[in-house]
Image (cartoon, rainbow, N blue to C red; front, side, top):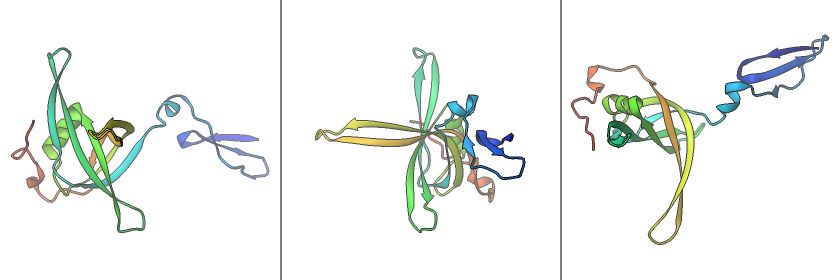
Length: 153
């Protein structure tokens, strides 16, 4: 028998006769620790909103950007609207370059939460914590920069 360890930790086992068995996932090291990951491509529904908060007992500042991506469903005209949050340098990038209608790709992780409404009902949330932002389309001109429109709250 021969074993081949390919990408994503998949192991293919083959007999000498060339018969290949079904791939069996065997997660190793960092791959096992990064099971919560997501990659999306979509268009921003509005400009990214950025606020700055104090950290480390008021000594440091941390930028936090929030935006929503409209992601098309495969084979359908419908879209899902995914709430995204970015921190630090990624949030500063979002503030400077991301505006309504821009098509981007994001990678990150899923985070769920909940809160209670005033009427006592519970609302469950699902957000993407963004670790990386990439432009999905080539820029048309230098007017895509939001630096003149940027605002912090």
